[in-house]
Amino acid sequence: MERPLERRTAARTAVVWDAVRALLESAGEQQVLDIGGGTGGFAVRVAALGNRITVIDPSPDALAALARRADEQGVADRVTGLQGDLGNVRELAPENGSDLVLCHGVLGLVDDPATALREIASMLRPGGALSLVVSQRHAAVLARAMAGHFAQARHLLDGEPTQSADSRSSEHRFTADELTVLLEGAGFTIRSSHGIRVFTDLVPSSLLDLEPGAAAALLDLERAVSERPEYLTLASQLHLVATR
Image (cartoon, rainbow, N blue to C red; front, side, top):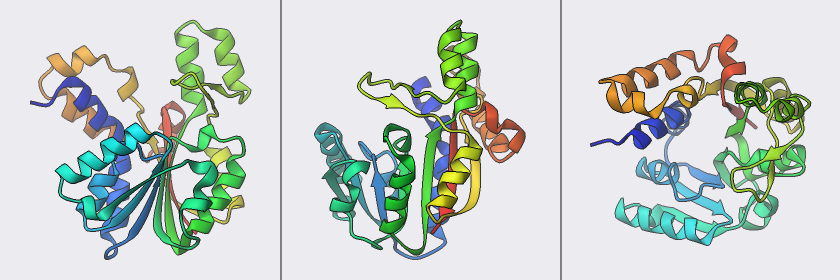
């Protein structure tokens, strides 16, 4: 039986996975690079579609979990885990060697996002695609203000980085306009953009547990609003697909 946390996770990731799967199903076997892919939530599914994927992550524990998951799903021969991060990706992945790069929740943790995006572009073959997920500033400002953290909201409004959940690094949150400038400056052409977690973070877990069909209805709603521009500023995250 699917638990509330699993239902919430599905609602948070389904829109991104829909877009990634569409990219993968549009061609034959692809070489995929997943920067910050952790325990393989996306990587194993990518491999299960017949692709080869390299996951770069700084955590040896996460990479060990990735190896176990890939083995359990029978795709270990198509999944490679390497310890590293976006800062040294050029040392770990070949130039022009990937058809698709996944960079989900990582760009906001680097000091120089513009340089990082240029390095990602160099990893892609001409015509290759980038799936990019970042935290979105407007929703964070609203969430901080609603929680009574007005000073934090004011700092976020001015684009100042905030402490990430692991309390070890600061995270930068982007607006859609800022992200467009960064991607185009790195030589990318934006193909689509989605608002992620427009409502999911606002819905109490108890509702998903108690109301029959609530999780499925929430997922359907998230999909319905993900490409509507008027909801982008409410989304906790932005997902953009761009090509080199």
